[in-house]
Amino acid sequence: MASHADDELKPSTTEGYKVGEKKSVDEYAKLDAEDESLARWKQSLGIGAGSAGGSLGEPGDSRRVVILQLCLLITGRPDVVINLGAPEALEQLRAKPFTIKEGAEYRMKVRFRVQHEVISGLRYLQLVKRKGIKVDKSDEMMGSYGPNTPETPYYEKTFTEEEAPSGMIYRGNYTAFSRFMDDDHTSHLEFNWTFDIKKNWD
Image (cartoon, rainbow, N blue to C red):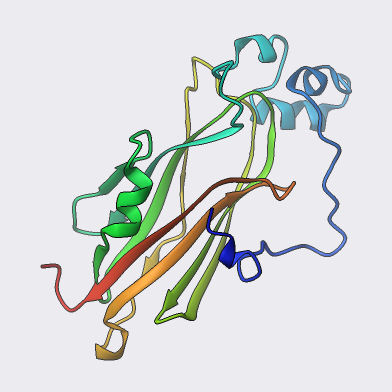
């Protein structure tokens, strides 16, 4: 997809951190049953006896992370909800800019599903440019997740609140490139979108 941002949009790394060996849900469920801390970690991911059999996921759908919905939550304004199940959703994101009033407080919320296997270190990366020049870069750690179940059909993550810049020099059109990536550097979704910072909402 939008590979032009690969060099500029790499996740931050922690010195000495090493990604663990990938295991199936069933292997995790059977791993070190006597280890209490590991048992608590597995429980936080919804992994236990029978986890693999009870997880959601379409057999013909090889995706491990499915981004279902993006929401822009703006203080004092109706939420802007993008349903990514619609085939034209990503194209509309690119073609139709959001409007954000200068100085407005906002945050993003994502609804997603994990299927087939455990996802470790899922994160959201974002690069913002104006007139081709980088003006902002975000790296939001979302966490590790086990496959969803009928009891928990999806996860939601709300990101840190931000404030749009104020002043005439900041008004105008911005382009953004976003990516959902895990510890294995597997990219689960990439997309371009645009937004305008304006003096007023209309």
